View (cartoon, rainbow, N blue to C red):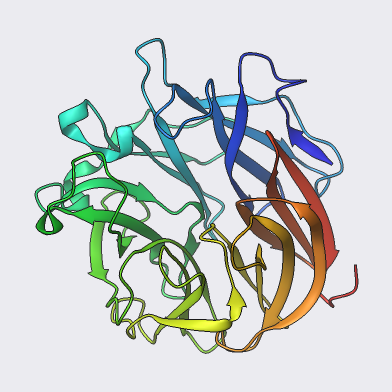
Length: 328
């Protein structure tokens, strides 16, 4: 099913950077970047569509953040569905660069996504004095077992001397809130190990409390792994050669029967989007092929026994459904 498409939603050239969560009430929220040109720094809006029937039908798209007419880049929306029913949204403007008129922003909904609080800037909690570009997620964030709101982010640290708008070399950090979204700060930077350019990262928590990170790396052409017992202190990132990856964002979620991952299972090309399952985040088995053709960024949402995959397909965003038992 096509959720976001330039043919049906006018004014945009391409939809990218999908994110999906199920709220505590069971509503599916799907968001993305709506780009007026095919460029990371284009004029971009953030759109949201909601489904109250598990993804069978969706309401009209709603603009959650607008690039306006000043050619602003509004990027990397990340939704978090909290256990108390609140929904949290983080996003960036101009990749968090205050020098470019940007920053990092937060909104909250307490009525299942029908209305949202006014945007509130949280840039001070993202170490602006240490970094250049900054991006939340993408995909979705999680609430840890202790109530902490947790969003993996990537950034380019100034110490590397890269041009201010460059997206490389990346570093991964953990942006958290321990007070329900009122305040945010970087809890830690994830040790890079031997990786040279880690960036977009997905997170999930196992039943025993271990937080698993699936990391995109610009050099190894495979998924990379890190884990933490407390959501703060992570193991050094390590490549997983059995998960070839063409430097693309992946989706990750936890279900009662294990972790599920979606990524383009190919070392060089963004195609062959595959659903995989793991008990520990390190060893993975293939469950199903989501799309054997061209594909791109993806995100995963779990509700009951159903896994929903939101993914890029050409200029659109598609939705596919699978039972968590593993049979499509």
